[in-house]
Length: 292
Ligand SMILES: [Zn+2]
Figure 1 (cartoon, protein in one colour):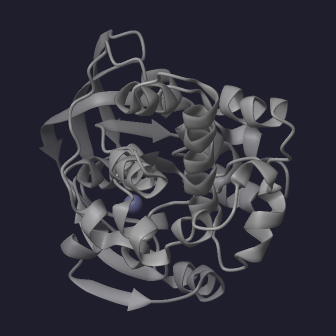
Figure 2 (cartoon, rainbow, N blue to C red):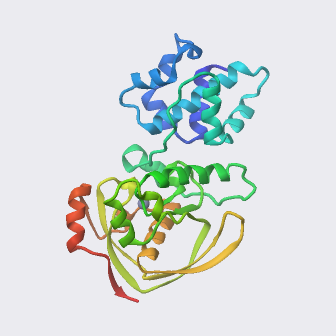
């Protein structure tokens, strides 16, 4: 099979076909060069506009290429299966073992700018037999540890599965920590809600929400004050829990992502505002409980 076909297959596997097809970031180079001789880091530097997200794709494609050329008689489907089950850390060390300098893979959030269509899909239920589950969690954890977010849904990082990863839902604590660098880990809760289902809602709140996937779009959204939710933890144990106040707002926002719904869809008013202006705006437009 030709390398270009492999690239497309991998692209499809990760549902990143658009990115790969639009940028042709990898395919162009394959025509004349042997990647075995190219320093990956140098290569990525040639693509100045390449985002970390694209770099991640590129590294995957490269890995696939190496597998293809180093293991004889390997079926392409096995290849892709194997590749997708590789843990991030293992994956990086694998490339390093081959003598390549590899930047750590960082995941960037999929945004309405990069692929709104992708974000609008309905995520599928997690199967606890899925060998990739721990890999998904690792990706979510990796992202949330580095970024200042309350929580994230797996779909936002390119994993269309019903998983919500909660980093922190204490608004005051997050705001305080935001002003101090390198303290992000201190407010990490690391809760994972798998296949969640909202079974009851009560009360009403309003908040000008933002979303890592919606860039500078703020939306004024009404949400229930209280939600009761059923979910599974990482060990396939079922839980039933009531969330109140700001925590309920965050979880309801993330829950919507699983069905492809964005906060700007639910907002009665939207505004475009950068982070600095938002900070000012929030002083006069706070989270508000209308009824309990
Ligand atoms: Zn969001």
